Length: 273
Image 1 (cartoon, rainbow, N blue to C red):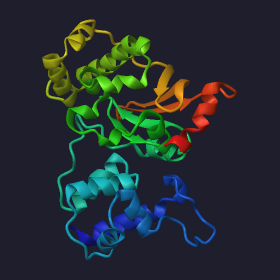
Image 2: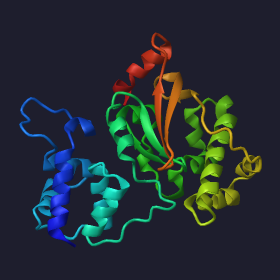
Image 3: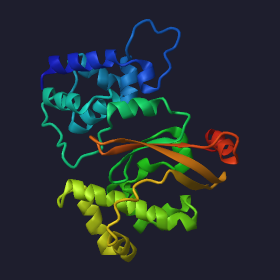
Image 4: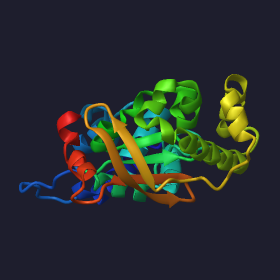
């Protein structure tokens, strides 16, 4: 580990970030640009003391998990993330078949949508990050682990995962999730995480086998979504999708037509969260 290079790299990236870049208020008393160390530590999910010691060249050797958290907190690009791992004395993470590193541009957009239901999804239907409003609308998807991180896996193995949609919409959503999985499977190959999900579903779900056999690769997105919320009832929403081809990720933003009942219900999400 090159402590001096690591400390200097972290400092320059911290000072390059502005509070508004990560969804934080600037505040009237802020005298210098960039983020404070304690703010970066909070974004990375670690103690301010731990992060500060790394910047001061006196901290421990960060683990790969800690470095990944720092890369996310500082909104690093893939090249910057790889550099961070190298100067910290670790091998760079494998980029192939890996889509859980959020693109910095996606993160900046999401940070500005805190009052709007929005989330970033991987090509496997894994929720990588949600706004608070999105958690209030769809539930907290960060609780899932293993295969269950993938929405298509939960769709065919966890019946309660379908409750957020009206029953008459279930066939359409099943086709969409399965088509997205097929695209990931074709792109990433036989030894990928997508292939593992396919094999697992083939072993447990006759319904999946039937939909998979259709070879549908056109039903990738549904612009109109109906959400059955446990407190607010039915919401009719538009789902705008911003796709990042390089990362195989998509930013989903849920909106409603102003003046409609669904629009009024969206304004109540913070109250029922």
